[in-house]
Length: 191
Image 1 (cartoon, rainbow, N blue to C red):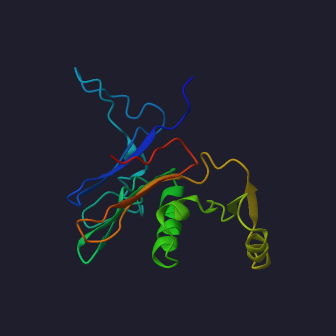
Image 2 (cartoon, rainbow, N blue to C red):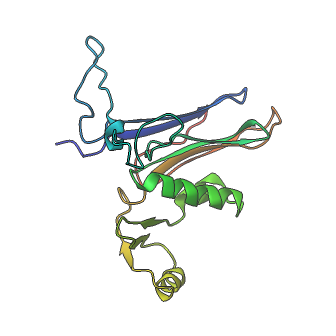
């Protein structure tokens, strides 16, 4: 039986400074169950979490931004591409995006260090999962503040997995730095 899950993330950049951030997911196993006739392409069903109930915060309507975990991300600087990135992992996606972008922008970490760093995950019951590689001092500090934490040894599905491409500068002679998260299969390659 194939593993559950079906999300892929891809980012690419070229010598002219163009970048793309792309994510595809067939949520809940096979996705919608609808395949395009003659093409063999399975249509996704990531709209599953949206609501048609006007009282729901996740109602689909004009000028609304219902919660959705498919987040191909893009960072610009002065209107120009700076970093194309994305992190797969259901509810972990927005949390991991925040954690890695803070590491890159506020702490100056390179993409590989930012995506390899230990992550935390806020659960629906407000408990906090932490990767087992997180420092004991930090976890103890969280507990002292009243957080209920649980150390998770296997980060494969729990803490997301990302791909990153960072443009070193606007100079045409400069290249990119790419990173692939080690929590799942992935590859950073250049040619």
